Length: 177
Image (spheres, helix red, strand yellow):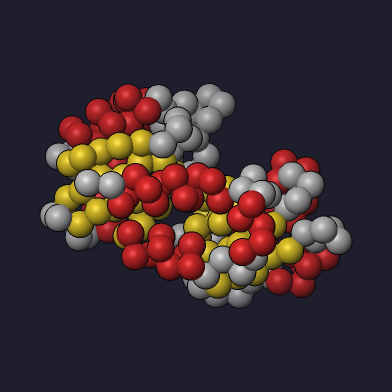
């Protein structure tokens, strides 16, 4: 059985997905041991299926049928999540988990506009692109950050961000039996 991590993009506001409903959707798709972490589109499940695209489409369609919206679905293996955690360029920021975000990208950006991101960065902010993960540190808050707000547009691909605390909690879920 393969363990998968699912991160949904843009959950909240009018696009709510209660944890219980999310688990029910995953279970209806025959995805085993489904567990969620907070109601913002984070889950872990196990399945024999290894086709990432088929799984993502099934989850998106299941949510659409149950809730009336079809979010972007990003799937990671445990090894991919572990790699993203291990590649964190700012170990010192781990003690401030709300200031450190990992933006998991749908694909490796072909031509990211790093100059644009650099022009938006405040003196206290920092960022680094490593493959399909964009690391961004916003000590003054992600909600206030122009850099954070323009990430997807500047990278040219969609992604979904999680703060350090959420990433670590989801890893704990994925590791638990």
